[in-house]
Length: 144
Image 1 (cartoon, helix red, strand yellow):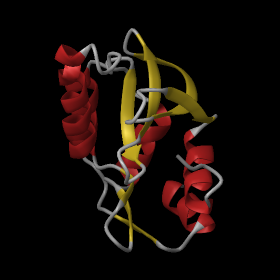
Image 2 (tube, rainbow, N blue to C red):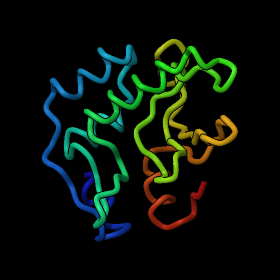
Image 3 (cartoon, one colour):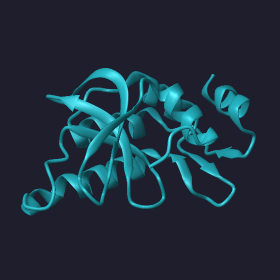
């Protein structure tokens, strides 16, 4: 389903082998979040989506865990950034801005996608769903 959807928007993306259940579960366990169902369904089809330059449209499970843990570990820099434990990042713009779901107590309240701006620490809504984010980012309707 997800591969077909992405290919319907652009044929210029490449897919990794599916993530294992253990890799997907690791996101929930390591980050203490409940599964965003659409993201986890996508990862069960492909463990990351990349363009022809190797830049990710959707991160692999390993990058989701690694990068979210990194940003959550920046808590000592409260004078620079608001906490990151209320976001679940899964993609980036290539220039430092990150895309993710907003969390409340480890749960996604809506399918909305937000962008975190690395320059001013703002968090802005960009899409109402993962599908809308993918299409908008590929077509340039969503920019940072």
